[in-house]
Amino acid sequence: MSGNKSVLGNFLRARRAHVRPVDVGLHPADGRRVSGLKREEVAMLADISLEYYIRLEQGRGADPSTKVVRALARALNLDDVCVEYVNRLTGRVDEQRQMIPPEKTYIMRELLDTWAHIPAYITDGNLDIVAVNELMHSLSAGAISPGANAVVVHFAPENKRQIVNWEELAARGVATLRFLGDRSSARYDEIVRELSADQDFMKLWELHQVARPSDFDSHLRLDGIGEIQMRVHNFEVPSLPFHTMTTQSPKPGFEVLTTTSGARETAFA
Image (cartoon, rainbow, N blue to C red; front, side, top):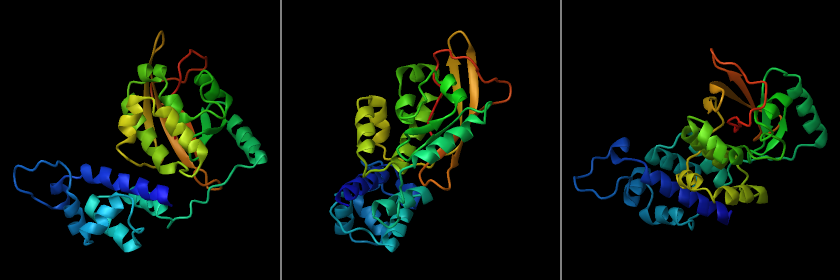
């Protein structure tokens, strides 16, 4: 758990930097040099010792109790997703990750293929694509395929150019990877290392934001075609913890492309 202690410390430090004193009922005197909270302010708001909080940020302290996690949540304005993330880092939530049996992968692919008019794919906790139907594969010009990573696909140069709301969706994807990712797996480290070569990714990664998969709109501007707007829906897979099924549908007034154009759809849970 020592690695998780370091991750927890970085998370607390990042959250502290982004909470304004007024957000938690503090009204410091003018001339303050720090935009976020000071360590002593977090300790005071959470009713814990400053020394213990400093150790938490340094990745050296004992894992916080449930009571301390709740107190830190109040002090740092943490929502339920952040609290779940902290509880996983401290080992209080059994992550129950599992490999998909080959026969279940085949069943998932068969299911997706029955949706001939709905682009769809399934990702695991690291946002690696484990199943995709033909329409989604075609729309993405092959980018969305088993073994590819949805966040890596999103950070491809052509997506940065073609997706109008790329920055918004990139922040969402990075936060989802941090929340769902299996930090104990070599694959997770490999994905982060690959993406770390991208400065846009590093700016978002250093924010330590976390998010569950949720629905969003993807707005593309494609050369020779024009604008396309898609509604992206994400569904948890009950029998497969940390897996997400993603579907896309055109917003009113837009049609789904049925021919490959070299354009890659936005593709992450």
